[in-house]
Image (cartoon, rainbow, N blue to C red; front, side):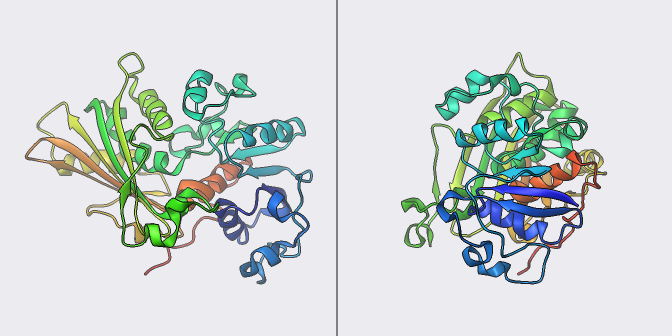
Length: 346
């Protein structure tokens, strides 16, 4: 068995990790940290863990992680990097679920996160943990930067078209997320009375997932010199889980049809276990609780514009499930291990 620590276990993402790891045949959670719950038993903080699984509900939450082979770091940006560096020093492999190692350029990180990076030399060598693009690099790493939830949905929607070079560099992404994407810390914007029967756009001056979307799409497209013209507008919708991203970009060749585009996407993702190209607009409920991303590309024949609708569960493929997928790769396990559960529906 491979020993696992979860750093900051009281977050939504960490709780989702516990749910997935409870049925994982190779990983065993032996250490959990969380400063707000130090000294308490895991099952007392999360009573839903009082079931017969591989998760030991009597584990005591500590301030520092015990030595393990693997650690999932669920701390906020800035705080995460310091912890990651210590874990790496101790010989622990790390999947970092914060944004601290997603961007390759230190100045870009500092511009978006308003914080000087404590280990800028690691940014260029840490693989961006999207297995569908960086599988080989992840296998040989000690640290993996788990992608953001909006970024995962958006990048997966755009990769085939940009890899094939069939679209122009101008892209608009209209994305919507459930309230769990904002985390578990109390906030006025995510109170029930604020979210219920309401929808609003936010971060209109730039969302922090924008630079990682740009970075990864530019890399696959080879458009570093020209730069993407990417507009990304996120919205908060009154649901708990789920992301739906609708991406718009112009086709270079006006003879493309929906059938041809769908064939391009189906070929690109033919061997990917967690990406499914479908011939109808997907619903977020289809992915609720699973590690699946559904993608529906089509051509707006009136404008000859490519439109791609992508959806996933922001806490699973957008966070914890993708982190387990990356951890499987780090330890050369089958990529789907512990992640084959179906979505919860309705």
